[in-house]
Image 1 (tube, one colour):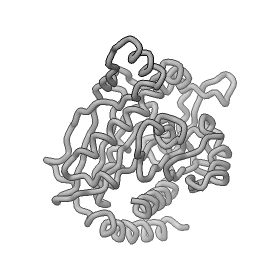
Image 2 (cartoon, rainbow, N blue to C red):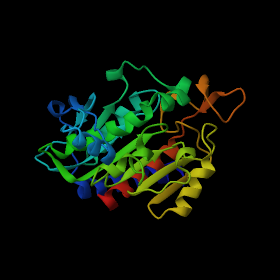
Image 3 (cartoon, helix red, strand yellow):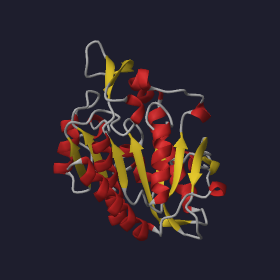
Length: 298
């Protein structure tokens, strides 16, 4: 697809999806604000409940960690479908703000979850393995569900039409796993979109909710073939293959190609160095595919 054809296709799709998703209109300044909500928590295990009963103790669910986010809602009375936006190891970036604006224009409310600032974390790209060891990775999954529960109570949100969009090493794929934290919740996200995820950790997993993987085929930070194989093995997984795209293909700050030598990369020896690069055609294809996937399922 040429750039001109891609632009025409995207503009046409955006107009159509604006009607489908709730009569798109610009975000209202008074409705774009910082909000606070608790991270979700898992209920006590059956074993712990039995232990507490034997001791005559009433076991209560632990309160969630206080999280912050940026909420954007289209003009109008709603109720609107909504998207929980989940950042990568860099934290919330400007290009994700741009995505939030695009989704609001398409008729979706958006909640950008900030998992790092409330925990005094600046980023984890230089130690992605450490994020898993520390438990922060699991906490970020529960942040996603905390955002889901928060939106379900919002008067302008349709509680049955909430999806999630995440980037790279976010909690997006983990939020949809059948045997992960998802099992603690009766309902998960209606649809999930994941930009260039690390599929190694979920290569043999099953997904409970529909997920679209935007697979950067020229990515040196993940094994893109594992993402491709997920789409072949699981009916809940769809994959858009972008064979020449690099990590971060939707973030203009990277330019045509930028290497981050301090970012941890277990696929290399020594285990550092990640190549990023912006690709406008790939970004347009990803946006069109994401909006169609969401509108079809929400």
